[in-house]
Amino acid sequence: MQPSNDFFKELILRERQATEAMLQANERFGLANRNGETELSVVDHHPGDVASDLYEREKDVAYLSDAYQYLEEIDRALGKIERGTYGFCEWCGAPIEAERLMIVPTARYCIVHQNAFEQSRAIDEARHAANPARPVEEGGVYGLSYPEGDEKKEAAATDGEDIWQMVEHYGTSDTPSTYGRGEMDFTDTAIEVGEPVGYVDPIEGFLATDLSGRAQHAFFVRSPAYEDYTAHLDAFGEDRWPFADEHVED
Image (spheres, rainbow, N blue to C red):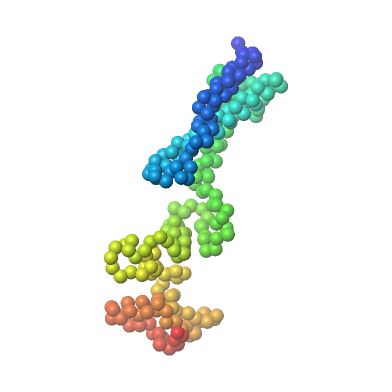
């Protein structure tokens, strides 16, 4: 026998009363307490203690949000009882099983469409995790580019190390003393400070040509990349490239 709407109304009202009593007893999960951590009260605290308090507060905020959402579902169910539409699936209009309403009195869908919605939500979450949307701020930052598709493919792409090197150029808190004794300049504290930027082959760092791009018009610039390249050739006794002395621009 299908229970009456009055039975479910009383059941839902008890749910709301229990939820409101819980919120009042724990002072909205402690968020109503104004004597919380302030800037000066954590001066002599260990950062680990502050992190633990922050973690617990984050959980309280999530629990409070869930409680308020449940109260909204309760009010929605009470409104459907007043309109005479309670107990019917909002998608297909079929009656919702009494057993389901006994367990979840605020149910909005039948078990078939509820499972379909949860499966669709799981697919959307998996798709988002595989290819999350990039932050909108990246569109206004010059020099950042990300490949479309799966980054696990063997292709050159901008990764976290590249991003760090971009921002590290503007300075960090590292000093030569951070890395122990020895002669070191501030510019040498960066990661892979001598790594080529904008080219791959060493000769691209000093070899150039005109707009025609023909080899007959090639020349080189005496840059740090050129000095490193020639020093490497001299160290191994190799010949320098054929037209290295034909056209030089300092």
